[in-house]
Length: 79
Picture 1 (cartoon, helix red, strand yellow):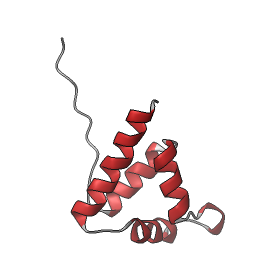
Picture 2 (picture 1 turned 180 degrees about the vertical axis):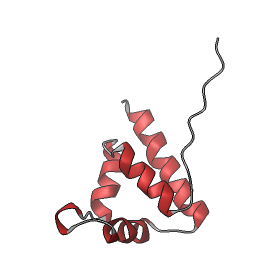
Picture 3 (picture 1 turned 90 degrees about the vertical axis):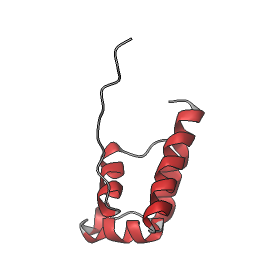
């Protein structure tokens, strides 16, 4: 994944957070409610993963669910 793709993912997540009125801190608190102690995360950790482009798809889905979004895959038109 190149830097532009990483920035696009980070910006998309931040944009959806802002649109929905949630902070990353709140989302992380909600994520941690359903995790056992050894799998809890921090706002800084999620922020770093977004910046580096190393966030897991499962974490993106979890964030989307918390803020009221669903990820939908749409097949591109064939060329």
